[in-house]
Image (tube, rainbow, N blue to C red; front, top):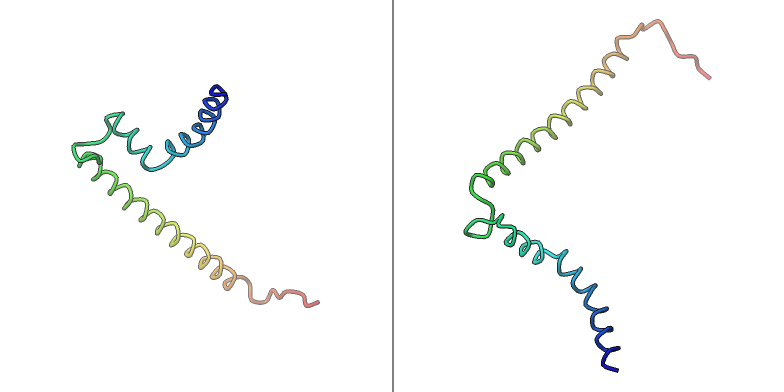
Length: 92
C-alpha cells in the first residue's frame, strides 16, 4: 500500500516541479545558480546600461518604421494626385 502512495506522490510532484521551475521564482534561482546575478541579485551595472540603450534604440526604430510607413502612404497619395488628370476612370 505504501508503494502506491509513494508512486502517487511522485506523480503529483512532477507537475508541481514544472510549475515552480517555470515561475519567476524558479528563473531567479536558476540565474543565481548560473552565477549571472551580481551582488544585489540583479545584472551588473554595465549590463543594465546596455539593456537600457538597446530598449531606447528599439523604441526609436519602431518610431522610425511608423514614420516611414506614413511617408510611403503620403507619397502614394501624391503620386495618384499627380497622375494625368485627363485620364478618367470609366464609370460603371
